[in-house]
Image (tube, rainbow, N blue to C red; front, side, top):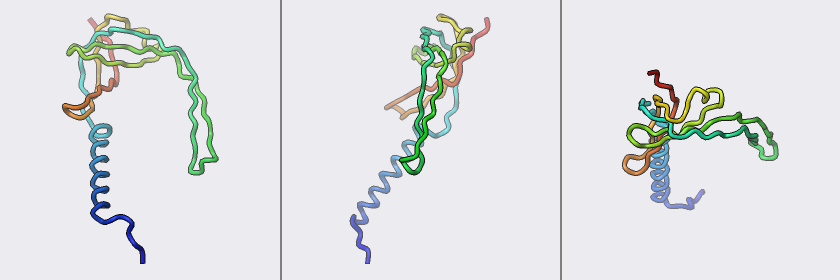
Length: 132
């Protein structure tokens, strides 16, 4: 006969905490959110030089692994001040970044994720120049 090591009420409590944690992760990171569009001004443009990146992959058996090396190309990180005074950052490769300059007005498509009243983060999906 198998004997339980933990009492059933404790196991139910652990299961409920697991469900609450999973629901929280889904709400903050996974749930679909509507992308919104805002106007902003490029406040900064910082060059990031090309750099090597190594990714190590392992399989189900830890003694078998492979290493993948590739070069991350030159890019620029834009600091964009939105019209509501918040600031977001967006990385763009060097060739696409050539059409943007500091002080230029841009249309920003972003998604806002977080926990209401506690934590908020905005993810920029794309920027586009505003034609005058």
